[in-house]
Length: 336
Image (tube, rainbow, N blue to C red; front, side):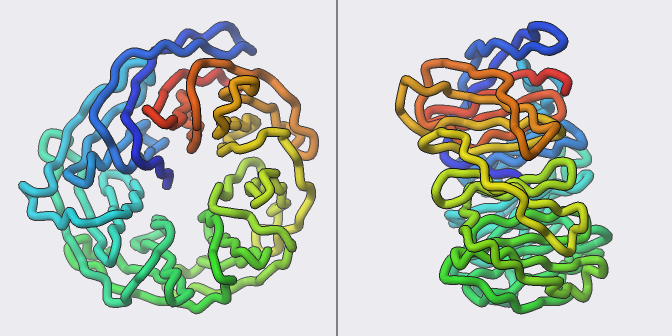
């Protein structure tokens, strides 16, 4: 699941500059305000929660010219629209929305011309705050109930009537930080510097595999993974690298300073993208590193363009998306 909030979507065309080169950006078209943005890399789809009023579905096979596939109007479908937070997750033809304060909506995308709501379920456990929504193996969903420090697993074998399958209590600090689902393990950080690992080998019986004190808070900037390494942004704007070749026993390897005042980041394969969140015009807007050796990131390219406050980069199969104060840019990605 990926999320970008409060942007205008700006679609861009791109030009690939060679087998080991990067690309140019050309602004093309601005669409309406969106609140949430979720990507499905398996199908190169993107779904946009448009100002809490509906869902717009796009095909990103050609990132320079995204194709509108269909839309769903929440009001026409009788879907609750007062949510101020929304987490989105794709799985095949299903789109799952977890909306504040306590509503799970399942939407069928199999026919883009007729996007339909399968169910809208009021969750039984009250949530003052909640975390990510993740699709597990089989017919299960996971979300985090921050207010009660619980991981909740929902059985969605009946899309029309999801039910709670299990929950497990976890020990968090005052604030949780970042989280990530990787295969059968769910990782979550908190402000006490701990990394908690949940074993979901059997999704119906989640178990705490271990709690690891790394003494550095990996903040809400996110946990990302590539090549058996977890990458986490620390509260002091560095990136911690954690070996998860044994996924149940993470080992801290390195804390790396990319020398950027404020940033968000993403990784995929051997590519790491930093999006500059500063308004300092002396710094590049986007910076790309080769992380084939994760302990020695190698600078590949810096891109300068006139944009402030970039954040939430997403590296897709054939595109990179990055948010800004004014919009979300899409552009082509080289093979790596």
